[in-house]
Length: 79
Image (tube, rainbow, N blue to C red):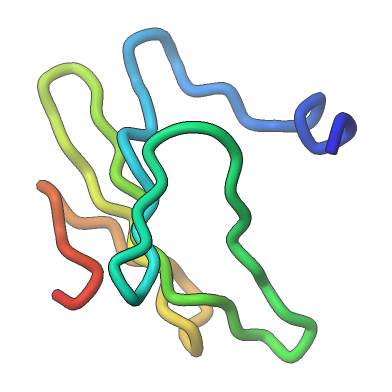
């Protein structure tokens, strides 16, 4: 875990991850959680909510898609 923290991306000042949402109403708004990416090319469905400079963005990770989707605003995990 220490190596991951050392290599972690640092957001510019004032930009934060407000929460990370998983299916089944799991929402993490503090601490450490994991998003799993598997060798066969899929991942867990996840929405990462980012806030800063008066904006909200949702980074949507779909299990079987190669790219993330970025949407303005706070998007719920089920759409």
